[in-house]
Length: 174
Image (cartoon, rainbow, N blue to C red; front, side):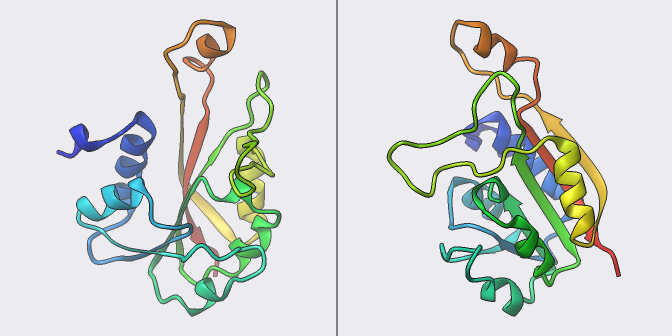
């Protein structure tokens, strides 16, 4: 339906996974500022509100005040020093989150021009699972996908076969 509006494979697969667990009756608090994926989520008929760019390592008041039925976090936790604290403070009982996977053939991402656009963590799937379990979440479903790029070389070739993104749907353990 919205396939032509997807800027890349990651957005398409993310929205397909999200719509398996989130309905139009849910309210979503998306961690991070509004972005192109936010627009796709809204255009698909879901009700989403974003956090306002506050440093979630230092200020988790938006999480504590939210009445959202679902929290989403798409490629956010790798930027945080303490995703543990953020995950512990989520009030919702449902979480859909994705992270970039650590690639054995590439260094962690670090922008040279933007202090925020750096990865403090790049997870292996078992590490992210463990983090979720330690913070009171039970993983119900997960999926991985690759991130091919159209360049020549060994690394670009490996990106066709080695998963780059990991997404989970989890519910809070009561």
